[in-house]
Length: 370
Image (cartoon, rainbow, N blue to C red; front, side, top):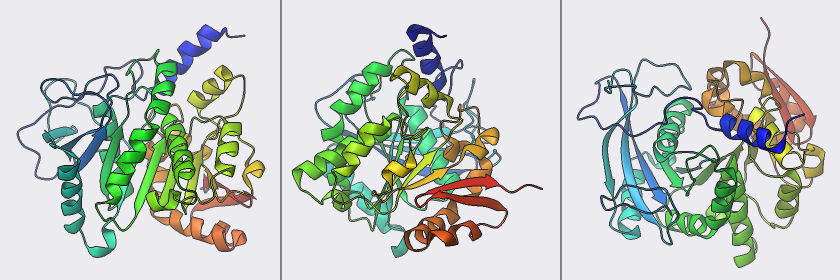
């Protein structure tokens, strides 16, 4: 039987996507490879800025805004991020071509508006990524760039950098920081709404799901029914939220984003340990009783079967790191629409994939056998 301290150490070692390796950091490169893809990522943060306008560890009492142009090499395996171990080679590694800070929120919103205007009218959407605990700014920005590229989002990528401690032993600090950040993320989403996107999709990972839930609750308290005005669609990936807390708070929100999709994984070792630390209470991303959420318009997608080809993430970010699952993502909207109108139609949607509807709002995805 593990002691509480042993469980804590295991959890904190497991949740980081780069455990036992050097932490990811921005590496500037004066040029990119001609075959690489370049993706601009917009960033808002309530972390402090250093004298050189670099984002620092800690909590700030106001928002600041940045941008990063990320070069993604062409020859790479889907779902993987190649970090330089020495000199950066744009033909093999993710590198940063440019970075800068906006003077204020007006300049930031104007930049997003220009990015949207450069896209075809039917692609003028934004995706806001809210990361989990123990994530450096570079790790989060590069992960968003990788997922945007691999998943074919065709949206303007925006990253919210809430103040994680960037330490393996910072789990409690980060949970408090998530709560500290709810008003700032709410203000940030209100700013993004001013840019005039067709739709705002929020993608929240792990503890970022808790922060997003708190923002929705606050928006409901401020003005009942206003959540869909800020968030048109919501995807939670392995949300590290106590299932009882999630049920209570979601039940009190009068209108939720549509679609609202929760990716779950019964092999998620990070959430298994988080559950142990929380008194063996299930997490929304693992072990929750889906039937208890039957009155809430959520679609649960169980992707446990795709854990094996994910890139060493302890089953905690399968959507972003499993090549097989990433290949299916463009068709998942069809599943969501089928479940909204006819749950029995879902199993026939994806050739080469086994789908079973366990509850009216839960689909289990599995690769088909040979």
